Amino acid sequence: MGIRVVVVDDQELVRTGFRVILSAEPDIDVVGEASNGREAISVVGRVSPDVVLMDIRMPVLDGLAATRHIAIDPEAPPRVIILTTFDLDEYVYEALRLGASGFLLKDGPADQLLSAVRVVARGDALLAPQVTRRLIAEFSRRRRPTTRPHLLQTLTPRELEVLQLMARGLSNTEIGDELHVAETTVRTHVARVLAKLDLRNRVQAVVLAYEAGLVHPSDS
Image 1 (cartoon, helix red, strand yellow):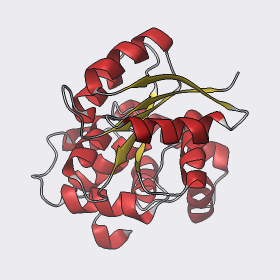
Image 2 (cartoon, rainbow, N blue to C red):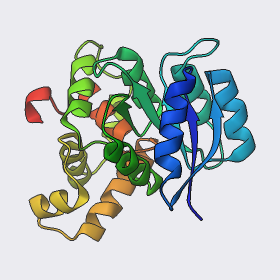
Image 3 (cartoon, one colour):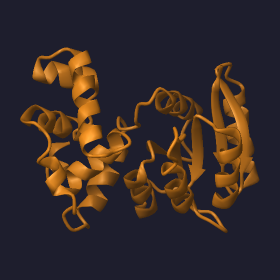
Image 4 (cartoon, helix red, strand yellow):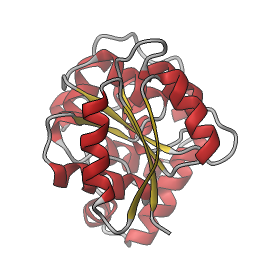
């Protein structure tokens, strides 16, 4: 089966453009569209997609509120990729805090869109682009320290190391090279970090690491 995608944007031309690009790929199926957050919640509940491309600013109900609703699905919620016009947008930052897997600029190249859909469908997060870490670093500095620093105390010293390296944007392979351990060991550590911190994905872990002061923008 192909990757099931729902496209959410208040502009019909934008939705059509994304649908044409995605539908041309043999491994991707566009199974629904929505023009606002309220419609998105309804469509997602009906078709159970793997990935949702979510515009952040829409009428009726914006992408932030829709992401918040979708992310609390007790069963396997879809991966959300935020679509935005601006790379430094506090709405996008809030969506990442809520569990979105990453974001894309609407004027980005088609191959970046396709790669992003495949990456998050595999369960990974869009942390590689420098702009994502810059966004997290920028808005985390404006916040008071996280109210959950006690959760970090549940991590072992090695798990703290892994979290710090994740926040620097390193992949599992790169973390393994840095710590001189196997990639399978890194995956185990990452899974334990997410479970102990009650987080959905790596992006949320990175946000928490910055907000808790575990890492700083200069570390990236």
